[in-house]
Length: 111
Image 1 (spheres, rainbow, N blue to C red):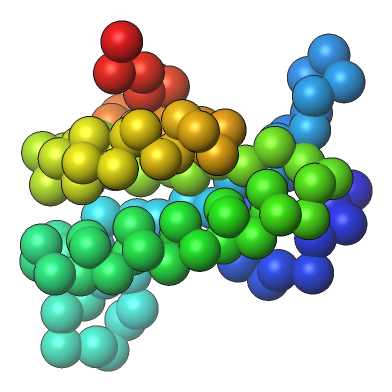
Image 2 (cartoon, rainbow, N blue to C red):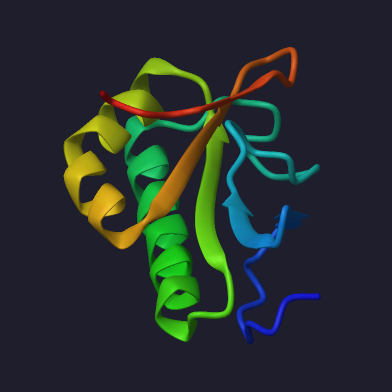
């Protein structure tokens, strides 16, 4: 169970005593009836989603009860954004996961 008060946490995981709260973002509009339903996100939308996910992850880190992670679609736009802020993410201990279209999850590490 997550003790964080954030409503944005999508995945709570625990393995070998390590607790991880992950904020997940999709790659396109999933709200039926909206103008962009089914369309991939623009680069500006990707930036906004990464920023929101980063804020949520930083709050989890600040709370201290869980490690923090962000899951993003595996695409060039999200990858570029993460590479630009990777040193800060690494210092904060925020783990990044990329999810490909077949739902295979890969943890990002620039090293």
